[in-house]
Image 1 (cartoon, rainbow, N blue to C red):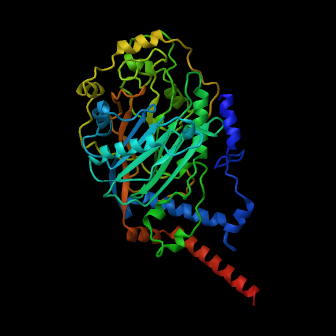
Image 2: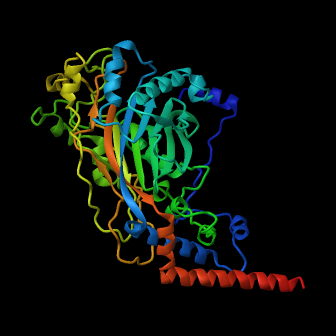
Image 3: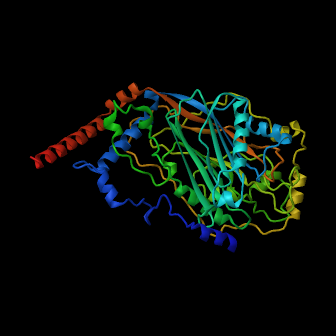
Length: 501
């Protein structure tokens, strides 16, 4: 950060904001005592109410096969660092191929753009971006070519823009957005994340579009950026639990009025999560690395894969098989790698499924359609010669630079939420599957990055509230605890009334 930027920050009075979530040294979220006391009812233990709600949620999860019908949704996730460029006529067909990469229209589109506009007004003042509006309109036009979609309210911060579209045939229960700045001590929006959480068909899904620290030898800072985003993402509305999504507020008030414990991490709240964007992890292979084995050999030196394997970052996340060329750095309007940077797979798509206690191994539905065409086919189809192994290795050997080294780990452990012993589980419709062969880059040459997309299937459920209510009423442990809570509340009211007599 230059002195002039520091001067601007001081003039604007911008100071580092406290984290939205502040875990204590023990890892527990600190709760203001006054707030805690004010939120509890007399005569009814807060922990007792939270514990009962947790049991209800666990029972409903394992009984999905009784009260609901499983349904698979198709999700297409896409990311592109546009380098402050606008869509052009010459790149229209490759951009369409990027978003039309599945044989059938997906149920949900999630599209993340980075570096839409990197001016002072954008990253410091966070003024609305005219370029962002142009990109949003252009992308929506491509999406609507494939069907009728509901465009959710975009989530944006600085140069980041996250667009989510849901097919209109699906009813949406709730939507919430959030963002995190991680540029210069958390003050600037040149780096950070924009997130959207959407709930539908008995599931809550989190989409995170991020731009992490750039340059080689900055692996540790990228890990810290991941940790900061994960801890500071905070939504204005609580995440709906499964009981919120399937029960009725009037008929099931006794259950829905029970308190919900606030998890330490947003990944505990949702069923599925997708993290994508310009993650900026680099290739740590030495200059002159062996050509034997092609891309797969060099991917052994991929910094992000090393972090995933060692749990230094993105613990519990998964990624599809990479078979496409590095996505950075290219000469503009060409398919040649720049000699200013060593090529790397900086643009990535990861996915996460929250563990569910007591659920048996999922039986995944078979892929019902053909896989998308190969990466080489995409390039030839659009009249651009494919990137060759020769050009890649030639650039690797010409570029100078030392391998990036992460100095110390930044581990985030995602434990399973606590739950009481559940009954025998029924067949689950809770799964996330990456469709093999769908993880590809596309030859859009307007930026020094290449756009990437990947297709997924996620398991959802169409609920029957009546059956869910019957399922809960037949659970003796839940009913016994509900009676105790009800008696405790009645006794508390009686004592309070007597004190005024």
